[in-house]
Structure formats: structure tokens, C-alpha cells
Image 1 (tube, rainbow, N blue to C red):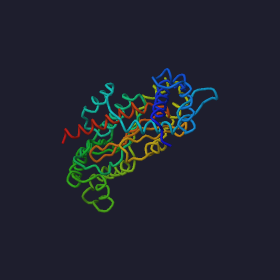
Image 2 (image 1 turned 30 degrees about the horizontal axis):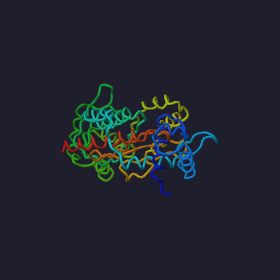
Image 3 (image 1 turned 135 degrees about the horizontal axis):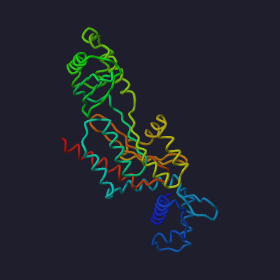
Image 4 (image 1 turned 180 degrees about the horizontal axis):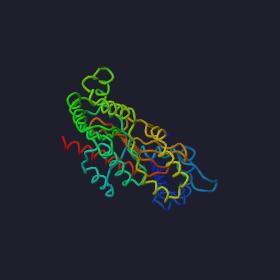
Length: 331
């Protein structure tokens, strides 16, 4: 059933009031919250209708009403159709993103921190497509700690890998030259597949251990989804008084498999994806896909059903716009 203009207005007010104050809305409260050209009796009738339609639910027989998952979905769909970024507090996102970095992991961490600070909610960045990164440089360096540091330059920044092996400077230099000679301009996937399909034993005999450890590490890197979690926003959730909901969100953040499932929920064909929890115990998420070079990022902000979808969506929209501007400037 289509909602009338007045029902939409009342539902929006009820949801925004609940997001801001966690207070159920009543007909009398609506009268005080907005200048609605109708009586309290009419407002009560409209609230009854919205409840019957599944957008609101009543906590107690004589109490006020709170939004349902269906009500939240209506709200976020309406929000996204008219989303405009105008929040000055999100300038911090722009400042952080404009700080260039040569490390892919640092860039991912930076994005998670920027959004976490802008939204005051826990933020997750999940990475995929690393196997498509184009290799540009190899630096292999022996360390005093009986490890070998590998810096792999790619089309989207450096990847750092520490190998728990002992190797001489000569072996490291020879391995660096070998990788540069054969694999600069190729993808990580092409490089790892080369060692599966070709016999390079004679050429790498002197530094076989370095090659074996590095290729093994890159295979793990290809198959593992990189996750960076910024939990600082959880403190804000605790301040809201929703202890049980905060515990639930923290448990998801600490469970990698469950976190990946939450991050992969929803229709990723949309520019901003909002998955509203079916009940108060579940976790809602607002996320956007971002592409930096060959790397695909999914940036997600987690919260309870009663999260600030408007502010979070604006922060994520701004992030996408800023990254597009920066990529344009670099091109």
C-alpha cells in the first residue's frame, strides 16, 4: 500500500526521533515535535494505520510506538533517493584521505579510521581483488632479527611481507633481481601461477628458500580477505546505553567469519547498500564499494537497528566522492 504524504512525514519524524533519543513516539509527542496541521486524534489514527501496515510497532498497550525493520527500510530508501552531503563535521574524512601513503595496508587502515571518526560507529574495510594487483617493484632486505623483509610495489601501493628465514644480502639481492626480471608488469596471480606451471629450480637454486616462502605467503594473501576493523565507535554505542546491542556488535567484530558474512550481505550492485537488521539483536550495516586501482574495497559501518543511517550514508558518500576526486587528480 502506498503511503500518503502525511503518513510519510509522520513515519520519518517517528524514526528520526527514535534514532536521536531512543524514545517511542506518541500522538501527543508528534504534536510537539512538528507543526502538523491535524488534531491529536488524527495523529493517533495515522499511527494506528502505520502500525497496521507494519512500519511501526507498539511496545505496550498504552505506550508509544517504535520503528520496525520495514519502517527503517522505508526510511533509508527515501533517504538515499535524496542524499546530499553537507555535514561540515565530515571535513576530517577529506583531510585524512588526502594524506598520500605508499602502503596498501596503511591506506586501508586510514580509510577505516576516517569513517570511524566521522560516524562514531565501528567501521570495517574488507579487501578483495588483490590477486589482480600489477607488480612494479621488488625489494628484498635481510634484517638483523633473522628475518627477511620483502617490499612488493604494486599498482595500488606497497605490500609488506616478513619471511621468518635467514638469508645473506647477496641471496636477497639475487632474489630481487630475479623477481624484477620475470614478474614486473604481471599480476600477483600470474606470478603465483608461474611457479605452479613452470620449473624454475635451476635459476633460483641459490635463493630457493626466499622464493618458496614469498610465493607461499602471496598465495595466502590471494585467498584471504584483508579486514581492517576500527572499533573506536563502539565507545559511542556504549554511551547510548544499549549494552546488549553493543555486545552483539562487538562479538561480530571479533568473529572474522561472521564479520565477512555481514560484509557480504545485501545487493552490492547499489552505490550505497543498507542492510537493516530483522530484529533488535541483529547488526545493521551501511556499506559502499570502492575501487582503488585493481583493489576492490567494501567499506562498512556497523550499528544497531536504531543507527543514524543519514549521517553514516553521508559520510560514506563523501568518502566515495573524495576518492573519485583524488583519483581524477592523479590521472
